[in-house]
Length: 121
Image (cartoon, rainbow, N blue to C red; front, top):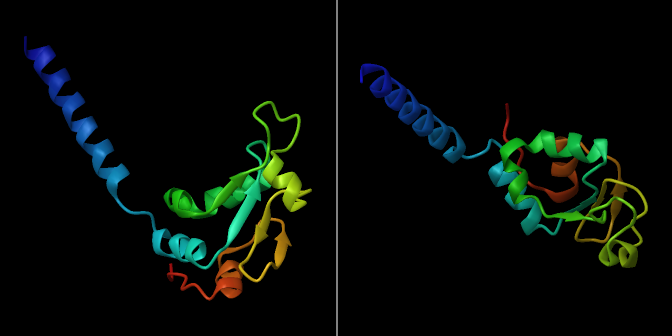
């Protein structure tokens, strides 16, 4: 009986910790939201290592970035949207002035292209 109580208590504590950690805002939430508000879009593919690097820069805040997946689920082609946009490499950032930049960009670079405030570490 005591063992099951402690296991249950441990499980409950673990669940509370997971909920607490996952509910905390990401460091770059405001920055990522600003990028989206300013019309920045990133085109990428799930299998692209540079796209994964870009995603990792934002951490939890990636959910606020306007990301367009260009790869078909089997990786054997592109979505119609990306074909029509002429996206031929990944990642590609497109800004509201129609300027496009290929490759993963640093957060400072994105701030420069958009005027969005980047929080200081």
